[in-house]
Image (cartoon, rainbow, N blue to C red; front, side, top):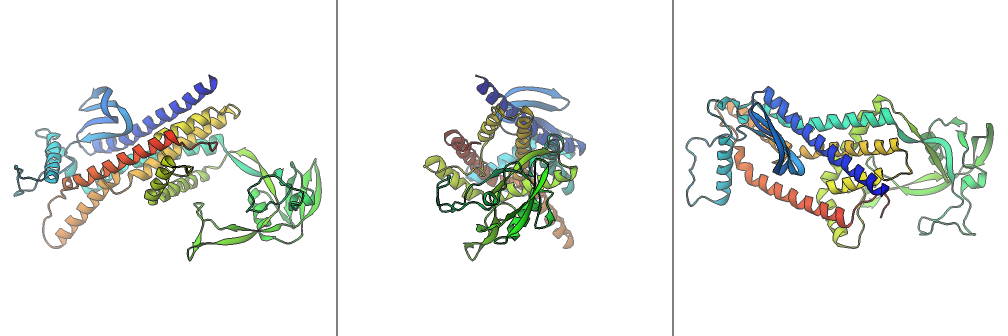
Length: 442
């Protein structure tokens, strides 16, 4: 019962955190819109039927039942049809009808005498500021959460103290994990290194961080070198010969580097020791690089999203396993938060830190995803503003006056993108139910 309660609390944290993230995203649009004089009729979290709402001034604030996003309703999103345009009649095509309906709906949001408050009338930079406000708010929230996690709670980092020593060397082609009598001893075990030893120096070079140890071992494959370790307050010098081991070269995002279609390998040293981890608070300078790394990972995932979705579908409808680094829905994120909260053997502060980091990553995903230059995402509106600015600038160079870009013509593309996003969400939710990504691999 306690585990179920903790799991539910973890899911609740994500639900509330997601609602707050969406609400702040929409506030990021709302504040500059009001600042620039645009009439905002609604600020809503979610879609579908309204759970509750209240009105303050000219804006209705509320929450709806389907928590898969949010929106603000701004006056005059689309410009009116240019003079001389074709009117709608019985022979008007379906797509043309959609476009004109969008124009009509946009015109209905403009109150008499407030034509100057329409979104489409704003200067280009003001429209871009409004549309960037939402993603920028998510990025800011992610940065704050990362600062709390890194500088407040701290993160587990490897120390120079040895936590484990491999007994033997098992070939990578072997599927077993236990040593057999004819397996060669691992270099560390053969030299007498023990768990609890603190590695002070390797080959005369002091080792203050685990990275120093790894770097030295990589370079000294096949060479017999002295390891100075501290054990029970005394220093010992042990002779270790790192074993030459071949491994794949990976880039900063953890992807295997290829050359001419084949994976690139490198030879490094191996001694068979694992570090003891300690929680250390990080300096403020570590926050932005951590956010940047997360942004790069999400961007890489989105660039390869079609293939990632195919992989998810094959795993969901077949015997394969889900990629733990692949895309997941809000259902999957909630399940992961629940598993974190239910880890009663882990200190509560570490669980809280992990959930805050999960919410930070969620906000990074919202930031990057909303910048995709497709309607109805924020990036699509930004693209529309930029194209409009280029058209007007080009017209001025030729001594002409350009009509506003008729973004209502992009409505069919908007519907197509919305349909694709709906199918993608349905697939991920299904996969997260029937074959979820688990912290424990099962």
